Amino acid sequence: MSKKDNRRKWMWLFLGALAAIQLYAVRELLAVFALFILGFGALTVLVLALYSLHKTWEAGVAWMVASRHPFFLGARRSISFVEDWTRRPFRRPGSEAAS
Image (cartoon, rainbow, N blue to C red; front, side):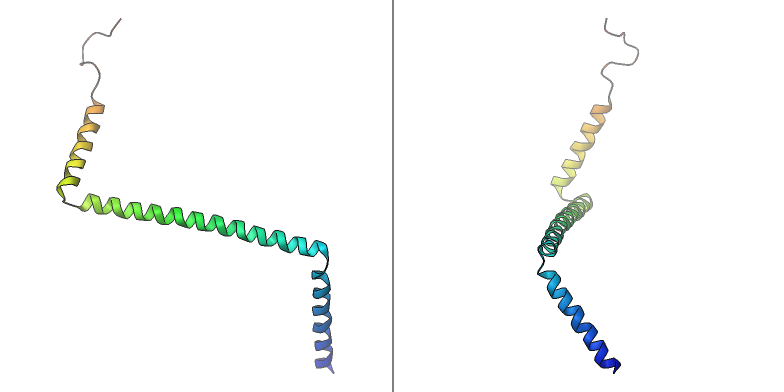
């Protein structure tokens, strides 16, 4: 007897859900939910793409730093020279300030 009642309960639940889907408000809510899923999916894809680009860039820079290729050695020397040059004062120590 309880098995028959259990089936009857599920049948009424299914018919109630089917009737609810036919209502305009429920259809609108499902459509908005689908749009939210698409929006958050697009944001997820964007964040994962940026993360993978960042990791690829990081691996490339690490490879460049470890490389002994003459081009990269020259680039490192040039960067070091520019950094040292920018740290120099505009005037010599002890010189008068411009008035």
